[in-house]
Image (cartoon, rainbow, N blue to C red):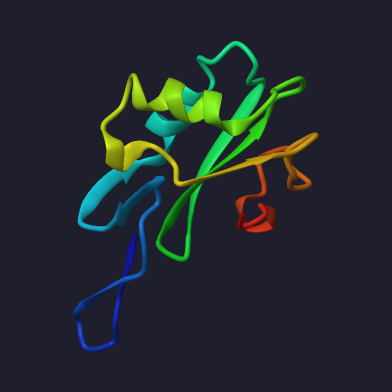
Length: 108
C-alpha cells in the first residue's frame, strides 16, 4: 500500500496481505495457518510475528502439548516456517466485525 506525497513521489505505507519477512525469509502467514489447521486437534490457528519470532496461536481443545504441533509442522514445512512459540487459547480474540483481532493476540 502506498500514497502520493505532495512532491509527487510515492511513499510506501505497508503491505495489505499477511506476508512478512523474518530473518531473511519471506513468510506467508496463511501458509503456516493452513498447515496448523490440518492437525486434527486444532480448531483454529493464527500465525503472527512478534519481536522477530514466529508465533502460532491455536484453539485446540484437548491438545496435550505443543511438541506434537511442532513435529506436525516440521514434517510438512521447512524449518524457517515452523513457529518458535505456540500459544493455546480457549478462543481467538475477535473484532466487532467477527474477524480475528491480530493486535489483541498474546505475544507468547
